[in-house]
Length: 433
Ligand code: GDP
Ligand code: IMO
Ligand code: MG
Image (tube, rainbow, N blue to C red):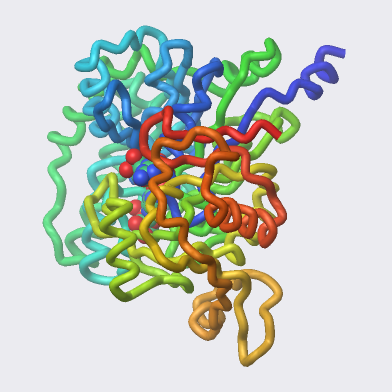
């Protein structure tokens, strides 16, 4: 009976990026965490950079979920995350410095895999010597390789110094061979790494726990939870533009595997999208603007990576790619961010479909060959040439902005429930129905 009752509780709201990342997930999760009990990250690692404006200042979170600025929220770093202790401790210090009450508010899954120094070194070497994906260099791919290869080291291993030492020694023996023989690079210092990770044991001891049990108990007792995606659906290792992707599943399936919760617990799925498109790193981007319009979007939207500072590639809104994203994630509502960035454009375009040899393509192709052969088809919209940043009600938006948003809804078949017109919490329009 209890089991059946449990299956009826749907208290997890999923908020994920529906484009190529940096859609403004941080702002939206922070905003919606107001009356939430738990915010949980389910995949990715410190490759994420989620920006939040708190008390008028800008902060970037890489590992700690974006609910942290709301006192009522407990933040969970799930088993699906690849956990970088160095980055986490830095972030923790930053938050402590703000005077936030963090006691018992951050939990790290005992099953999350650790980012090790050799992961970062390999990530960077591979970027320089072989495959150029344009990664963040945070060791994400190599860490997930170890996880799948069953040689990864988990946070729970930090709590048993003997096991930790053995595992580091074993892995380092292998990776130092790879570094020296395959990549002609320097080996890493075993003692230094062991000491470094042993020191993390005492610093992280209080945070590491069985978050799967914690979350399932929270669901049973009706607690409200946000599952916060990192990256975006088109960077998904299975469903994105492979190999130009990240190494995890930002898509909705990642929520269940990355937190250890059942799909029946999910109550709603919100896709966050920018009012245009951006992409950092390499890979296909059909609506990219390699011209002064792209430069204008970058300049007004301040499109520079929150983690690496790299300039983001910019382009028009791709409703066709979004339709695919909606399909694979079951997105029920959209949060459209950065609409204000388009304030000063005379004409704005939405990509409505792709054509290949004059024929409309059925769905967003994920293989590079097809993506390089398609031609985006656009619909043109008149700009609104009005400052939207102070608008808080949908009815007060200029007619041309409403036309633009309605077209997004029409082409994607999903309604918009949140419109963001600035980076601050209050610069938001909530659409009730
Ligand atoms: P995330 O990774 O999805 O959380 O997004 P990022 O933080 O990497 O990038 C989004 C950027 O846009 C950040 O600098 C935000 O402060 C900013 N931002 C978010 N929403 C808005 C908005 O509606 N308007 C403007 N102008 N900036 C926004
Ligand atoms: P948030 O959560 C945008 C991109 C990198 C690169 C590719 C693989 O802030 O939206 P990786 O280091 O993951 O192996 O790099 O994925 N990438 C992101 N792009 N936003 C992110 O995170 C990203 N995290 C990784 O630029 O193209
Ligand atoms: Mg980001």
